[in-house]
Length: 274
Length: 326
Image (cartoon, rainbow over all chains, first blue to last red; front, top):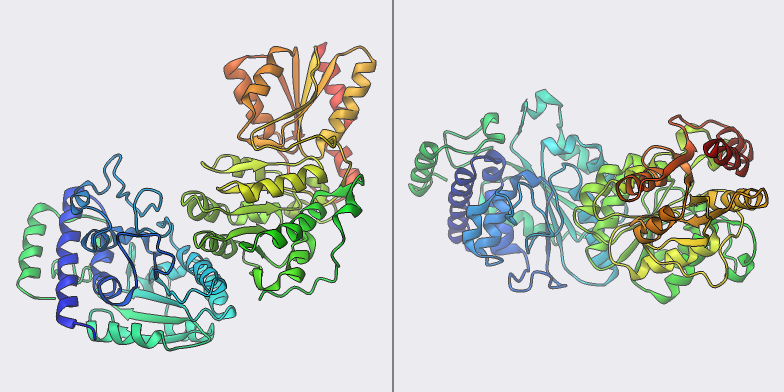
C-alpha cells in the first residue's frame, strides 16, 4: 500500500530542493520541474524497483526523463534516494559538475540515457522495453514527456513502435502543464486531444490529475495490469505547481527563482499549500 | 518479431570469396554468421532490409530483428535503448537517411550517451546510381566524423567489410560503417587484418602517395600502376578508418611524399580528404590534392557512368597527379 502522506511529503521536499538548486545555479527550468514533482516522487518512492547502491542492477525499472530540461527534479530525487551525495545539488550547471544543464548519463549514476533534445526519449524507452522483453526480465520502463514535446514528430514514430511491438512493459507519462516557452500549447501548436491521438495509435490511456497522489498511484498500478499494449498516463498538471508566484506562468519555464522568490516559495511550500 | 517480405535467400560466405561483390552483400552474410555466435546481437532496419541485406539476418533470427518502418529517427533511438540494456544493435538504412535524417538522434542519444550502436549504412556515395541525388549520400562521412566518440569506417571491399563488421562486435562504442550498393573489386590481400584506426599501405611511393578508401582504393591501385610505369613513383594506402585516423601512418606517408592525393566517393568537403589535409597541414605540410565530388549534388545515371561523370576514376587520379607535379 502506498503511503500517500509520505509521498506528498517527498514531493514537497523535492520541490524545495529543486528551487534551492535552481536559485543557486541562477538558471534552469523551474516550471516544468515543479509540475513533474508528484509524478517523480510516486515513481521513485513508491512504484519503481531500483537500487541506488547498484544503479546498473539488471532487474531495475528504468526511468527516462524525455523532457530533459526538468533535470532538477531528477537530480533531486536521485540524491534523496541515495544515488549520490546531496551536496552535489549545489553544483548544478557549473563547470565540471556531473549535474549538467540537461541529464548526461556518462557523468552521473542513475541517469539511464542523456536527454535534453526533445522528442527522443520515448524511442529509447521502447528500445529498453524491447531489450528487457528479449531477456525475459520483468522490469518496467517509465518515460516522462512534456506536453509541448509531443509536437516533435519522432514521438509519434515511437508511439507507433510501442504499439506495434506491444510494449506492455512500457508506461509513458505526459506532464500536461499546458505551457511551453512561447505560451499555451494550444496556441503555439495545438496538441489536443492527446488521449484520442494515443488511443488511435493503439495505446491504453489513463487521464489523471498529476498532482493528486492517489490518482498517480492508481494509474501506475493499473498500467501494470494492462497486457498487449503500452499505457500512457496523461497527467494534467500546473506549471510551477506548489508556488503561487510561479503557477501557470510560461515565464518560469526557463528561468530560476531569485533569492527573494525562493524565500517566498519555501515559506509557502512549508506552510502546506501543495 | 520484425517482418520483412524480402525474397532473397541466404548464401554461404564462401560463395563470395575472390569475387567482386558489393560490400552490402558481405555485410548481410557477416551478420548472419555473427548472429549465430552472439545471442545479444540485434538488428534494426527502416523498411530497406532487402537493400541493406539485413533481411538475411531477419530470416535467420526473426526474434532479434526489428523492422522500424520508415522512421530513421525512431530507429536510432530504439537502437540506443537496446544498447543500453546490453544488446549490440546494428541499425541499417541508406547512408543519407542514417546520417542526415537521424543526425541529431545519432549525436544526442547514441553518441552523447556512448550507446554501443553500430550504424551500418549502405548506398553511400554516387554508385547508388539511377535513384539520383536524393538517395546518394555525399556528406555522410563528414556528418558522422564531426560527432565526438563516433568511429567512422569506409571499407574498400567485401573482405574488409566482413572483418570490419566482426571488429564492430568486439569494440564498445558507437560506430558508423559506410557501405555501397554496387559491386566492388577485391583489393585487400588474404593476409590483411582490419584494425580500427589503422591504415593499410599497399606500397609507399617516393613521389606521390594516393590515400583512398571505399571504392576508390581499386581506382587508386589502377592509377598507381600506370604512374609507376611512367616513372612517377606512386604509392597507395587504404585509409578505411577515417576516424580515428592513422596519424602515424599518415605522418610517415607525408614525410615520404612530394604530393599526396586523396580520393573518396564523397564530397571533397569534410571527408577523408579533409581529415588528411587537416592533419598534414598541421604536422608535416606537403601538397595535398583532394579528389571527390566537388561540392555538388549527385544525379541519375548508371553507377559506371556516374563515376566517370564525377571523375572518380583512375584516369582522373592520373591526370591530377600529372597536373599537380608540373
